[in-house]
Image 1: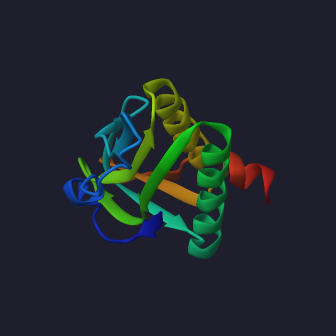
Image 2 (image 1 turned 120 degrees about the vertical axis):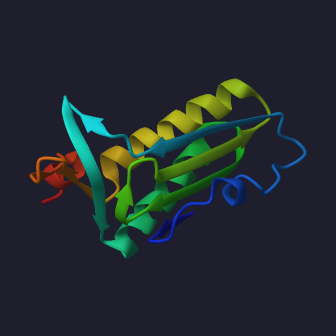
Image 3 (image 1 turned 180 degrees about the vertical axis):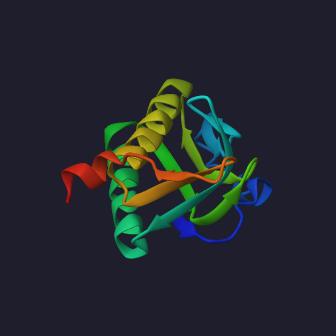
Length: 141
């Protein structure tokens, strides 16, 4: 589990084998798209408080491990400038059965978006930019 300013290499991220007791791996990969709400996006910039972001991500992973019958959860979130097509976040959840893997994977990405202090700024083709609303920033100061 990490916050990184380096590109997330998916082949490397998914290369670590799952435990032999796991028959399912669910994953999510968030990729920078070229539009948002009808506006052309040029690139994104993610910023964070790294120590707190990693601490909250660890808590979310622990919650997923305790709530579902999953054995392994991997998370990597990129910060800094990301271009169109770059990987922003990668998640992998290994479990004995697919239902638990899917549910835990969805939980992890939704909780990351809600609770982890990582902020996204969208820079548009027209030269304007805006910070995307962050629920955790609104509720935690």
